[in-house]
Amino acid sequence: MARLWFPTHPVDEHFFDAAPFRLAETFDIPRSAERVWAELTGEDPLSWCRLLSRVTWTSPRPFGVGTTRTVKTVGNVGVLEEYFFRWEEGRRKSFYVLEATVPLFRRFAEDYLVEPSGEDSCRFTWTIAVQPRAGTRPTNPVNRLVLSTLFSDTRRHYATG
View 1 (spheres, rainbow, N blue to C red):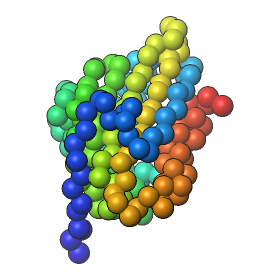
View 2: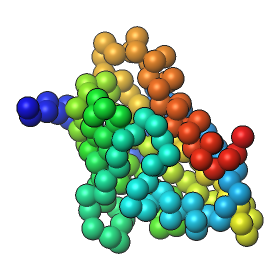
View 3: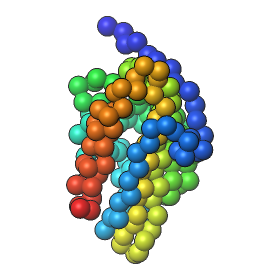
């Protein structure tokens, strides 16, 4: 059976400050920035996140602005097509969702910032910004709870608390 896709709207970096629904967390990680960046851009990124069943790069390497990937949630409840509009190799990448199989948001974006804090440590800041579709705002508390598992799983993966 063919999936029904719901297009979303593009964003730029200002959306991370202006979004009506925003989650962010900073992790102090006892691993080098290079190692954490390699995991975030590897063949199986975010594999430690229970909410996600598969993240697949759909663009060839080397990655940069214009890179795309597909994300499937557990049970294939939702599938997201993502477009990277910012890419600072080894440091920062940001994407917005092009389209999704769940009609929950008009805009959805994420920002990953990895900064060295020592020779074998770094600070990783992950920001999720969303503009819900009209009529879906009552689901915000549930969405916040579900999306926050990405952060708790990352904290556990990197043993940061």
